[in-house]
Length: 141
Image 1 (tube, rainbow, N blue to C red):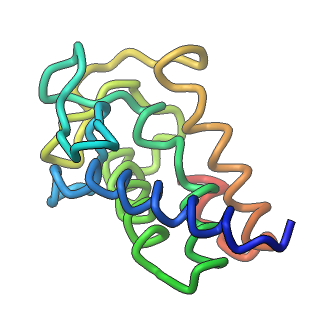
Image 2 (cartoon, helix red, strand yellow):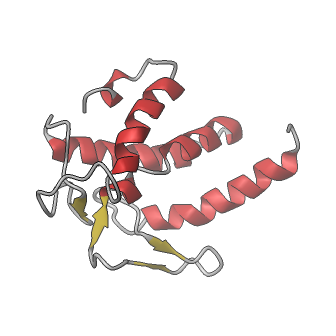
């Protein structure tokens, strides 16, 4: 729309959502629960583990936010999380849907193309397209 109000609201929300990424410093995996009013973060029903779909679901939006605000923190946060998944996958392609929160490794061996894993696979292709097909690392992690 070109209206600065929307960009400022998006920046404010992005800043509040960044709190989720600060919890797991080693991997950059976001925690699943964030109170955007208080900044309180928490783990969900998986305890200290996180779902593949939760980790791989904000890349496009945070990358766009970095592009439009000039603030690299948003893209850096989601890229760190994605690179941790790629490191854990060790070139396997299809990966389990449960990750250890504090270490780039998988917590189970179950693969899901539906709930708990689907968004990760969707965003790999979308990130490749979003970058003008220049970041080939997202084609076959």
